[in-house]
Length: 329
Image (tube, rainbow, N blue to C red; front, side):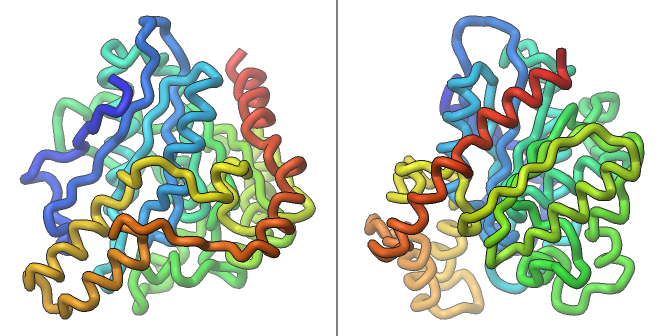
């Protein structure tokens, strides 16, 4: 069952207008020994514009090797100009319910289902942690199944729509003309309660993309609500470090299956099925490395600097696993 693609929605259930044939799905990393194991749902970032492959396969492997049954979520994103609103939240909610519904098939413990989100994926996981009660499911088969995570790991998460917001994520999610009510709803530090699941947060002081204050705001809200949490702020590191390893730095992410929606959008442009010119489709394939050519992100000098942070930042998977063992035992 490792590598299984699990479709989340039936055709008539999923209506995001800019999907171009994409339907959100899970990819499985399942042990075959029939041992009941805790589950980790990995949710990559990408500013709600794409589902980053750098935060998919590598952390999934980490948690798989640590003994988890693992799923990676490819959720709905907005690369261009069709606001997502609550669709990604419905995607992750259905994913958690589906994992619990089929816990016997995948040998997952339905009482130990954690979510691990990176950047905008962290926002999506934290959204589920605070708004799970708002998200009902249209399929009767899921209505009696909880969508509340048992714990969350939030890696350099987008949290707030306020002064420290990552604006591109908020625009992709809600649109440029979002109402104050919508922005407040997605400013997650405002919605933490005593019923919010335990959370493990980490970020770096020098993150130049998502200000470190996002993590502090959520940690402060957790503390005020009496929710168990751990908060690690590392002294140095760039945004989007995933597992902070050499494989991540050299962009060895495996098959970029999380970019399926982006690929389908580009192909629709090339086939003349959108209002966008074919040239834009070719550019998208080039920009995301979907043309078969590996793209470098870092200069040699930047790689030297980033490698120096691995010894510190790279301990976060082990810290999070120990924290989960503590709260679950």
